[in-house]
Image (cartoon, rainbow, N blue to C red):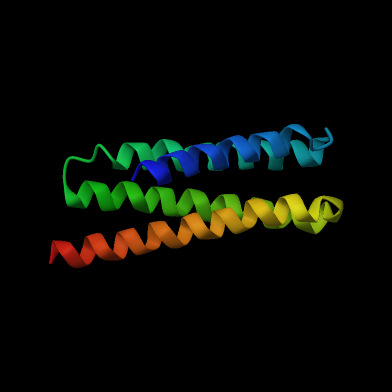
Length: 116
């Protein structure tokens, strides 16, 4: 799924661009670091899933992707609570996170069904 590979990479880049524009403060810096870590982990772990050694390995790697994209959505929700002047930008990132999450969950379900 080359498209999802590109999408997850672009999601990480878009989150990084968003984070770069967040005002520096002790409180927000922690959230920025968390969002950068989780959003970049999505693409890295998705790429790893494409090199899985078995169906079980593939599913396990996708479960990591699922956790990381859900965590990214969480951080974006927190940013929205305290940074409503960037609502449109955050909503766009959050929508993309939810779409990627839905694709990953569907892939996990399909892989489990095909394994049986």
